[in-house]
Image 1 (spheres, rainbow, N blue to C red):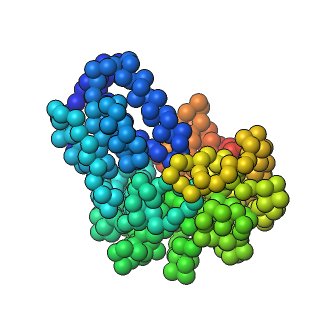
Image 2 (image 1 turned 120 degrees about the vertical axis):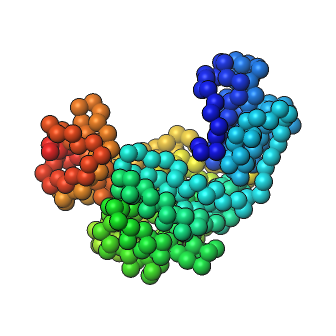
Image 3 (image 1 turned 30 degrees about the vertical axis):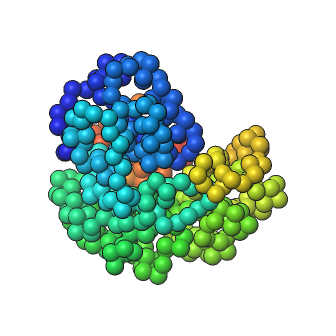
Length: 390
């Protein structure tokens, strides 16, 4: 926001300028954007509507040519936001997708910060539009990342969440690696925990495995599986395969890590037999967390050209079955009652709330002010989340 000059905030009904930072992951995201713009045009016909974000690259030109918006600008132009807001004439400014936004601190609380280390993706999964709207993988400068984290740590931040579109590809374009970056972050005074965004199985190499024993690294890794049957993985144009990924998960679990993953049900080609084989394979995986999705066709992707052969009710049933499986696995993991190291983030409804090193939620009662404090608990009750008194 440092590039934004002061403007008075207003509501949609009375604003002179409305900036929409859009998503385009699914067709419904595009549809929702069009609906929102139409609603604003009716509610406040004099407002200048500006669209940025991923949809600027996918449907921005259509919105502009059809006079639905005043202006469209890409990710690179965000750094010129004050200049953009002062434009008097309609505009369409979309730069190439090689741009790197070096404003790496994307969000923060009083104790933790989200650090974007990477943009873009070189993978070409059949269902995903992201590489086409965010470009190839490219890394933020290492020295800038280290400098920002050092400054934040000096000012009391202690947990850092590294993010990116395909974070595990960090450094492939700058002759370094995610493991090398993490080794340097671990040395920064004041950094108590580092949490990672999603990784691909192929990106966890020997160099990465060497850093897993460092206590600063959160004992939770999120590794994208997407499916547990090789036939479906081929249809999805995924690079991972079940056998090698299962071996990787087992190796990480044996080191004490809680493991999350992504999984898609209802993708074209998911026959009953493929689903059941995938489900039986998924039982074998030591997974504790899941980002579960029901497939939604995205125009412009390969998957959207395939026969959409999975009824919504079937996909919903499969979703619930896998959801229950992972809930049970998470409960089983937490019942081991390991000592928990928790960063308390907020106080709400009579509880202090924080996540432990395994990325599980904890609700804590205490007569002390625990907000933004690190605490250890080893006596707690395991229910839908963990409950403790401190």
